[in-house]
Length: 79
Image 1 (tube, rainbow, N blue to C red):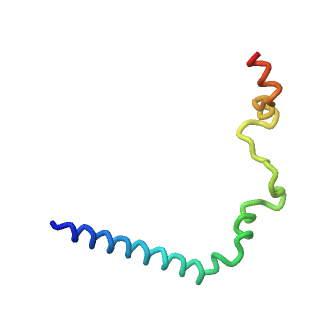
Image 2: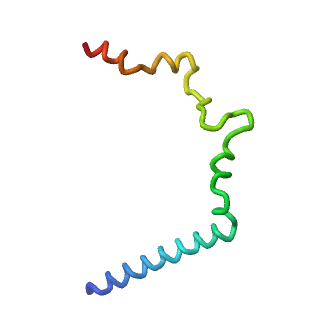
Image 3: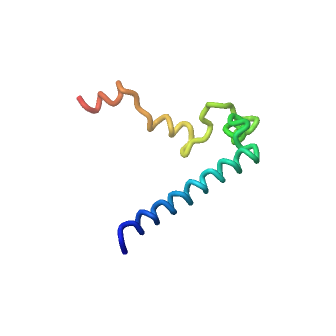
């Protein structure tokens, strides 16, 4: 195959990707996905859960505090 077939194939693939991206953006606009961006970010929180405060821990909260050290505590180990 000559080199221009590769270039033509690249342009066709790039065009298909571009058309797919434009269609996805059009779909998002048509269905109201971009109207209120803050609503989607806060919809994962319950009414009891405050915004911006960590409430989920992989360990219990007391064990979580044992594994965190401050800069002063870690300097004790270095000396």
